[in-house]
Length: 432
Image (cartoon, rainbow, N blue to C red; front, top):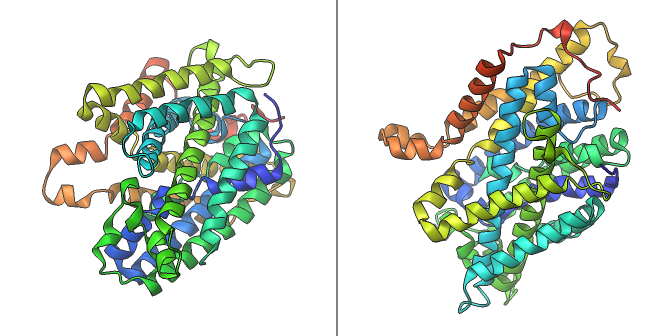
């Protein structure tokens, strides 16, 4: 692996990874559903939770900068079975997300070229992100920097909550290929959090001031509804005649960025699974340019297979998409658990906190608060289905939870693993 990513790359990757269609389109739904004040409260709570999670990840990433990030930490500090389940859960999440973003890119391009099949544009996106990730880690970092920059500039012109912030954990994965992780990661985490909170809260505040929350258009949350995006409406009221076209271009940029990051993250996660002994060894091979090439090819094959299911049957495609629905929150839960165990093991083994290059905020409150809020977010994803006892809807919404449990139990039973005692946690296992 090559440590080619600079501090500016890490900062923009973490920031840009959190600005996707969840904010560009679906933020209006948060305002319409919870009201202006409610939306601000929810975004603020999510921002605080993300802050604690990012500082937790930052402490572990500066102590032991590894491409496996929180998956490696879960295996080292908690239980190998926990790391196994976390790794496959996160890989599945991003592998499917690549397909979703590529398909959405095709839909967005139909805004300008309605007579061409959307799959043509989706295929071009697959080729493009494969080429970017095949060249070098620096090409990925540089591409992601400028794609994220476009999104940030768009948000800066006017100064659904949980999903909007997901992607910030990417900075932990990039730590393994950062030129100076012990300085770059803390800097990226601190600057990214405040910028995200500033962008999100100010943007929601401005949208709430300009747009009536009773407007039914705000409930739109599909990339097909670019003309109803809250940002599009705001720009139109500011006098920008081509607002829909501008926002469509920005949304395409956001989707391309997400697909690009998805291939990077899932490739590194499959590579990590191989290095940890959780996947075939061939996926741990790295070529001369520092790219886990077989892990990338394997990930692309699965993403393309998911892409093909939409032509075979819409139901199969939708079920695969829903299988990764809550995977992001599960990853966040894993970060909180791993960090709580890391800090307890660190103290239990008689190490000095003053030796840590970066310390997370408000221990042990931070990870505990984040863990509880994540659990609430997972449980509250579809309360309406529970109220109606709509079991099919419940299964579709929460499918990723039993998948994680099955993976965890499978590994635990097969290899008879146990929770690692704090005194036996190997804190030096993956340090430089």
